[in-house]
Amino acid sequence: MSADKGRNRLARQKEGLQSPGTVSEAAPPPTLKQIGQKVGLTSAAVSLALRGDPSIPPETCKRVREAAETLGYKPDPELGRLMSYLRKHRSVRNISVLGLLSLHPERSTWKENGFLRRLHAGVARRATELGYQTEEFFIAASKIPPKRMGDILVSRGIKALVVVDGPIRVDTIGLNLAPFATVTIGYGIGLPLHRVCQHQYQEMLRVLRRLGEAGYRRPGLVLETETNERTQYHYTSAFASAHQFGLETKVPVLCEERITAAAFTRWVRSHEPDVIIGQSSPAALNYTVWLSHMGLCVPDDIGMVALDVDTEANHSCSGIVQDYEHVAAAAVELVASEVRCGEKGMPATPKVLLIEGRWQDGGTTRSTR
Image 1: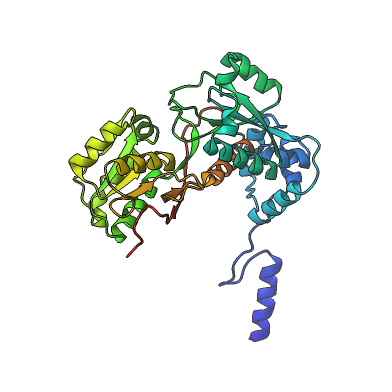
Image 2: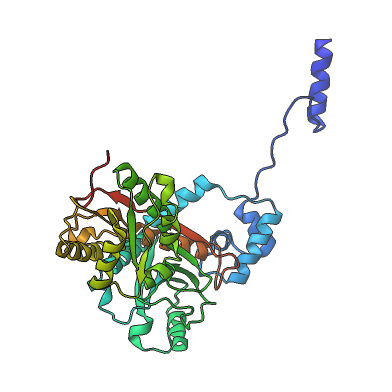
């Protein structure tokens, strides 16, 4: 009987049938050559199209992706990682250019402003690692009409843009973005674009948690109106949950167009916070001076925290150190992903990528109990 079973099993295998309990082998995925035969392209062109390479027309990329999907093609992530590594480490003559657009009114701002300097360095470094050359464009400072600026970008073969907002929040930049894959940094531009931002809400929660652990009970938040609006009210929204960390919420937020010494002094005397949260370490240093004029010493009499500690200026203030280099790098990675996928113009579903900063124990608060 066992011999008969063996012969029957062999016969079924020859007929292409399966024995009960066995698992059929998956059909091999289509090759680039097979996809190319279907769409009339070479394997190399198919590879470029599947990666959304700017040298391949978007319509062709779409046609290739549809054909690949029909044939059951699935990209191999490990092979893709290897090929990305090989492309990164070989010399390429035709380097793609990434446009770094600034809405700041002065060209010198890149060098004078520590925040922008770190963003610029982060963009340039990550762009180079991904095979891009970075070219800077100053929309506001150059006085070039937006339409002309768009023509310049197209004529230089630029497909990817990272846009850095200016000192004032705007709802448009006057530039036709249809030809470009675009990512902006921060919330300063109201257009529905992919963006990379600091995780202000989570950072405020981290600050409140630290203050509660350090024994503070009456935190007070000081913000300029522009900062409150540019952060989409994330700081003030998170601050409202201070009670979750054993803190009182009786001290109202001091939020004005410009924080003056007089307004600050009145606010402190009226509400008596035991720790103050400022928007930046330079602002916190000013508040420390104003407190000294009131006879209050930081941190013995009152604590001080900054939501953006400038480590380049060697500020020893307690607070959040923003990882601007990582924010910039993430923006480059996101726009490079758009280019690979052949995405251009305003996205149907904008993505928001949030990057957290880290807490720094400084000399302006009590240590955690």
